Length: 447
Image (tube, rainbow, N blue to C red; front, top):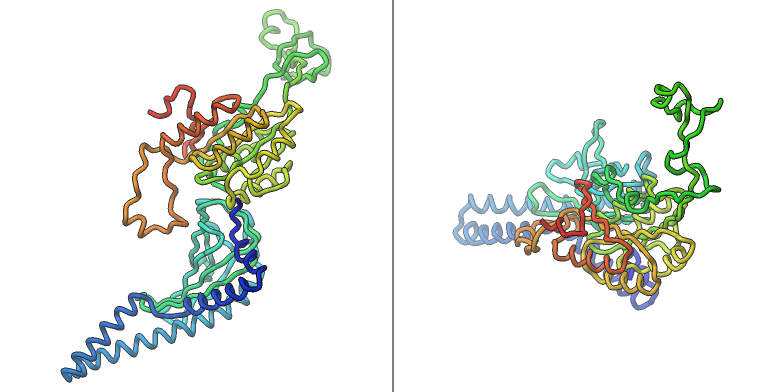
């Protein structure tokens, strides 16, 4: 099943009853965000009110009464200021969001902070108030406001996972510096951006070519593109780079070494990216293969979330980004049956390292189609037995932007053994941070 960030509410809005319920929920959520009192503010209000009533009024302590009244007046003024500025900024943001962002890159990269081009006006005339922004959709994108060289506040985002989005949902929050009052509102604006997975040091590693490169088979009518094995006398017009100078030094005769006429058993490459939990490193391996030209000249690429096959680099990279919101090898069987069966094509599968519902689906589909494929598995880091996350980490870290947990040796070994039983060769396991290829044939990678 696909996971589309903006598809759920759109589907529910087709039903009239659901449309009314959704409208009331949206209005209730808007009112709840504009409600200015935080838990800290309510606690301070209760303590200040109780102290003022108990000591200031009950004990007729004029000093406590004056301090309490001043605190309550300040708290009320902050509440009014926060709500007024939130409403003003909501009206201002509707105009700013409709303006096109000039110079903003359309393609982002995970784990890298990028300026989106959104320029905002901070609350300069309110010294005790500040404005913050957070992306609710797409998921896993951290956002903050920074001041550039010209003194203008711009939005910078740092995606934690890849995505392809046509719109963005921002949550703007106006709060005081003490955290007593805050008021938020949601803004949905068009966005034609996508984020690709960071490649780390994978560019230094021949991930695909080491497995799919085929030596030419000697053939008299083939093209001269094999190894340099044929030797003949020099004739005018031959390149000086092909001259065997060591032979000339001994015999004083010019000979040249030419490429052997040969043919390759397979010229067409078919690759597919399976999306699931923890697949960012595998998607990065697919990106490296596409950008480095490791697939050759004749190739076809597919990924979960994209129905049509891709035969251009731009479309394939966009498919890699779009697969971030999908899971489960939903289109692999139809893709392989259309492009990998017959014709002597080489098949490459980019698979996640974690055990999930995708694993039995891939094994069943490969068995039903009888396709000889080679799997590439990308990992970020490998750990021993998985330990439960500490309570402070679960409380403090944002689940959408927290770093992914390391893949354990047990689940990676299970994935490798299961995939190796239905593929033509053992899987290629590559570590994204170091670019190291793990030898999974003898189990030495576990140590």
